[in-house]
Length: 364
Image (cartoon, rainbow, N blue to C red; front, side):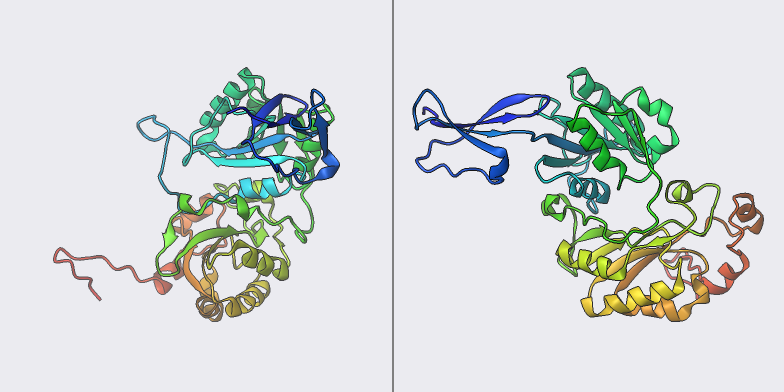
């Protein structure tokens, strides 16, 4: 079948054509301020839509290698990655942005892409560098950010055209703007924002529900939500304070409630590293969650036993699981990693360890 209509996508890096089905009433694309209609060969039967200044930005979470040195893959993940959807939300609307979690989907290195962004942890850094090297070999610029990049910037620069150090709210939009204007810098390192008010909401529309496990009792996927950053403790083994700082910054509760509503889910994982970092704020947030009738998972520190009233409020507001890092029941061990705020003795008083017997019963 002869094609009467086609689309020419023009970017700073590539120009390519995308065939469209033969139709008598092809609708003009949206965003007319960036769309130009052309008549080719003097015939109105041949129409092209030229999209000028539009880029395809692909944000990737690399997978890692398993113990057999194979790329780790799953059919369904437990929950979607928050970072890639959050970064996607900060991309100007004129650009096309796609996200990919490599543990779920293979990367097409031949896909027309203008800019690749990789979010990197130490666990997937080796794979991230392989991905970056392959895209750059094909002439596609690569930028990197994340915890590992922040800790090892010189290492990362050997594999990237640019890197982002620390939080991305100010660096990422600036990087995109510089790339548009062919003024990409090697390193973007901006101070942490003092306020977390009015952050962009993640692109929940970029979540494919079938990629993630559903919680049977709620018939819903688990959606990650961040309500604060930082931790008042500075344990030697933990990266949180190095990346987010020891000063805890809280998002306004109304922003959190709005984001929960936009997600369309009823089960959440609050990614805050210490949900009880501020008791007054935790109480206010829990009370605001009660009318929503949601279920959620959170993370607490070992001092939570001091506030049984808040623990009760957690349950009332929908908390079904709380992760607590005890690390050790030896006070000397805790002291050696600068976790002095955590006292081992109360662990024995407030925790009951149940060990199944040989018969399968649990002693009282």
